[in-house]
Amino acid sequence: MLKRVVVTGLGALTPIGNNVNDFWANAVAGKSGAGQITHFDASLFRSQVACELKGYNAADHLDKALLKRTDPYTQYALIATDEAIKDSGFEFDKMDPFDVGVIWGSAQGGTTTFEEQETEYIKGDGHPRFNPFFVPKYLINMASGMISLRNGFRGINYAPVSACATGNTAIMDAFNYIRLGKAKIMIAGGSEAPITPASFGGFSVMKAMSHRNDDPQTASRPFDVDRDGFVMGEGAGALILEEYEHAVKRGAKIYGEVLGAAMTADAYHMTATHPEGIGAVKAMQLALAEAQVTIEQLDYLNMHATSTPVGDLSEAKAVATLTNHQKNNLWLGASKSMTGHLLGAAGAIEAILCLKAIENKIIPPTINTTTLDPEIPEHLNIVIGEAKDHDVKVAMSNTFGFGGHNGIAVFGKV
Image (cartoon, helix red, strand yellow):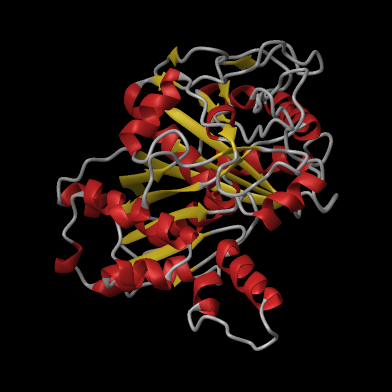
């Protein structure tokens, strides 16, 4: 018999809050995390806007030796995980370490380290004076490895990569291992530190990002008729997934249950989503079926909605198909209007919003949407401008990634 899986700990490091409480409060308040880039001189780039972390200093959380050995994306992962572990209230040192695993993803991994090392080599005298930590710092699996090393977790450990669907992929895999009885507790999530010249420049030259440089706080505007691209974000989200009976036995606080998850592929284009959202529709249907939830029972959908002209419309069409083009009680939100797009970490922080919406009976708003695109199906209920009080019993999170990856996760009230 498959085991039930619940979430008993949360950790977040985001452009609108460096912990879960601040993140949630600012999301409900509709705060924008966007601004002019400060990480590097972006004055010659087409886009100069990003959602950076604020009031953040890694040295406040990690010692000098660890900072020297890790890339920012791993540092983000460790900080968010530390919060989630503390939040879970579990004494992991009293547990069999082989019962605790880590599945932690990233779309790009140690981009900062790779760029720094390559730049130093090119500018140097030709002698290969690479940092001995170069390779372990930039590997995408190193965050999961370092979480394990830091805490002594010896169970399942690896890093999934599915571009911007990575966060949900990690959650889905952790969910499956626990319900199959292969682990009792899993740390799942994603982290990203992509605001670097090469990474940012690559997306910018693709014309994928907003260039609303004169008004950065409103640059991410999902579903708006004037949307012109996504705003890159950075940070991490961590979730403690636990076998239900195990959590109940120890008297754990339970945020919600992971009811189902699914993945499909568009098989359509390297970077663009299918215009009718065929793969997205199927993934949502499969996730709901596994969760044994009907569309009428779904209360809140945190959409991928990155604020790109093509992506927002294809997802809206997919949701319209899911709802049989009929008005219902499903409410939609686009939190990337506030956080920007955290790429491989997006699914993790948005899962946290789904669980907090269930806990607090509030749906965070979509901000900056002033004139709804007339092509967005009229029957869709989008929470715009202000948060909405709503008894959320079931929430779903959509994530889609370059390569045609569609990752969906469904959470429910226990």
